[in-house]
Length: 225
Image (cartoon, rainbow, N blue to C red; front, side, top):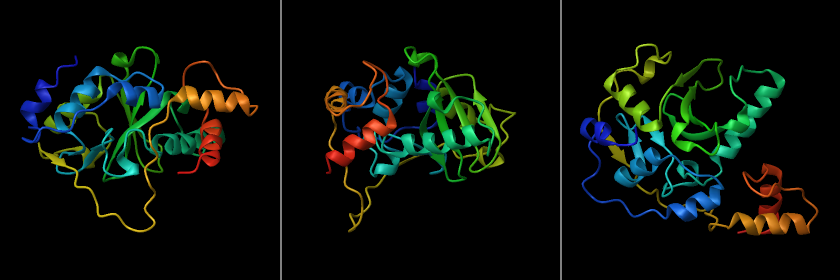
């Protein structure tokens, strides 16, 4: 199901129409297709938090790097998970390369898309884990339905009690005042430009799919903001 009606009835979106989103540019920058339910969710609500400002979903117009869909958080979280996965620090039930962080909670949990199969984003499920702990929960449905299930209390086996009884409301994000030291946003980059640069500088990169983290980091170091 991709229709956000169940969520908008339960948790009305802002009356002010959010700014339009260039999905072609966003998907090109991420180098992957996105689920249709997420696109409808992001277009209807804009950046912000659900359940009394408790669940934040990353958005293409996120007001800081840390809540922006194309910001650094997903790759950083995946790096931490990969380390835990390799070292066995905390059990990770999925290959971290198939987890894409899509949000988080005030209680420290992280929300993920399980990006399998990678070319069928509308079939991606949602996973949530606790901060620095071993508990995971997998929701067999899309992100929009997960929000409906949590806010309405439909999920009766969720291991995180702080996600129970959330108010049915949405809080739009307010851009923070810019402060010296805040990291500037990098302009969107065509991933093919990164691939061409990488090949010219001796890196091995796949012709399609995600660009390896070390390659993207090397490109960013060579092209400072």
